[in-house]
Structures are given as structure tokens and as C-alpha cells.
Length: 98
Image 1: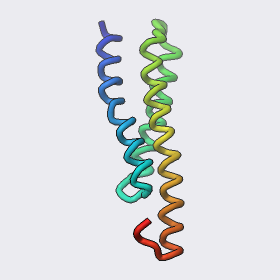
Image 2: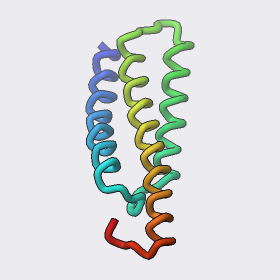
Image 3: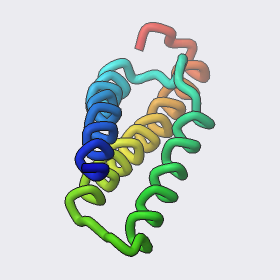
Image 4: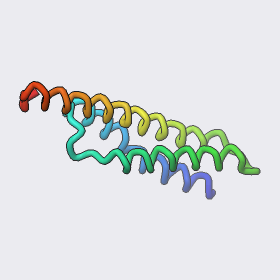
């Protein structure tokens, strides 16, 4: 039962990441995003995945959702880097619209 509740928590928490990734892709700016927040969440998922891998009652179906969220946060981190470069490029060219 505890695994089902944990899956529910991770799935519901994880629903925000695809929406966040899509928004990051579309807005093309890092303004309003926190790199530290993303890094803390990313490292938190590394800890969570590690805990699942060394747990005596290892369950693949629980691990799957941790890995899925970890990938989504990783994509958002990559988009943050891309968007930061786009912001810097806009500042250099003085183009505030793109």
C-alpha cells in the first residue's frame, strides 16, 4: 500500500514537469526561473532513485516514476541553459522582443 501512495505522490508531483518543460520551450527565456531550485530538485531525484535502488524491497514500478520525473527535470535544466544563452544573445544585440 505504501508503494501505491508513493506512486500517487510522485505522479501528481510529476504532472507539473511536462507543463513546465513545454512552457520553458515556448517562452524562450530563463527569466523567472531559478537554477538553484531546478538543481535541488534534480539532485533530490538522484537521492530518491538511489534510495529505491538500495532498498531491500526494490520495486521497479515505483522507480519508473522517479526516473521519469528526473528526466523531465533534466530536460527543463537543459532548456534553462538554452534560454539563458538566448537571453544573453538578446541583451548583446539589444533585441528585447525575441
